[in-house]
Amino acid sequence: MDLLQFENDIPQDAKQIRATLQKIITDHHLVFKTNEWWRAHEFPVKEVVTILQKGDLMRLDTVVDETYGCWRCDYLTYGLFSEMLESVDSGLRSFLPSVTKGLVRYAIHQFGSEEQKQKYIPGLADGSLIGCFALTGPPGGSNPQDMEMKARMTPDKKHIALDGSKIWITNGSVADIAIVWASLGARYKKLPEIRAFIVERGEKGFTQQEMKHKGTLCASNTGQLFFENCCLPKEAMLPGTEKGISAAYECLNQARFSIGWGVIGAAKACFAEALTFAGGRSFFNIERDIISQPLKKKQIMQAYFADMGARISSMEARAWRVARLIDEKGGITRNLAEAISFLKWQNVADARQVANTARRILASNAYQIEGTNETYRHYINLDAVETYEGTPEIHQLILGNYFTA
Image 1 (cartoon, one colour):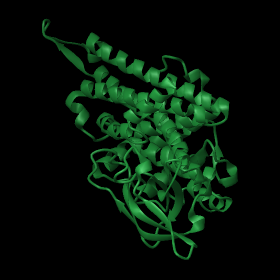
Image 2 (cartoon, helix red, strand yellow):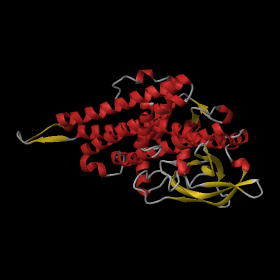
Image 3 (spheres, helix red, strand yellow):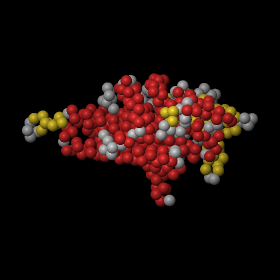
Image 4 (cartoon, helix red, strand yellow):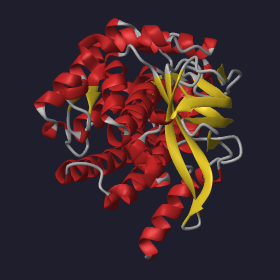
């Protein structure tokens, strides 16, 4: 599927990375394995890291370079990489492009001290360290400024104590380090002063717990984090986060970009499975009492595929344009934040429509999550993808403010 002929414009480096990833997906039977993980509600992080280390794909980054053990590429290449990962499952894209790269490595690189960068980024690049990004708290939801997580100076003025909890944290129970956002209690220009801290697994007063019995993203690790008088040295704070909540939003834009690209892969996977099914199944002609053409030749089916194909082509057009803008400007600038919100919001909405249409074509066959069947898994995952990194309403507000400014 290449209605708008983007394939001809893919750089050679991006084609090589995509070919490497495709070979890994095929050689390791990742679609089959992911179905098994999804049914068992498992995310075998060590196995996933081992697989992604092949071809040095864990090191791929758009911001961090060889200085800290990464391999830098442009945003278009990373978008295509995210797309292929999510063609397998949203959990894989969440693990690497969105969280490990987009939220954790980016936060340390952009807002950390040189010592923090040297200590943590190389491990996050080679897979020996797993990180998580702890912004969402139980009461805050889409409004992190109302977080109950508190940070306070201890009486000796040498430590920071954290109290509170975080919820719905990808990689939360398997992470070796957590980027934890907390309020200092004071307010500046009517907004709470918020900072980020690096908390290592095993710190006294820090507990990690897996969230089980989820109805979506079942092949992804999700955790709750609990802090009770968790004392950290003052050096655990990311110094660049003195700018407050806007630092967290910068990180979120990195993750939103990978989501906007990733869901193209999920949509294409659903389209391909529906097309294979409709091409291999014939419909019964009642009037002639004979087995007739393949199902995909029925006009109603062609209308379904036209709608899915048009949505996927629109998703690609948005993603390519945003990636090109970012690469032209040398990174995600402040005036591109709205474009990324547009990309995440609209591409997820279109991906959900594609997955739903494919599910209808497959009928009851969609509900067998076994072998390499994947449409229903994508369909359910996309419900969660729509919600995290900003609900549709949040992105509507961002764009509404932009269009009426």
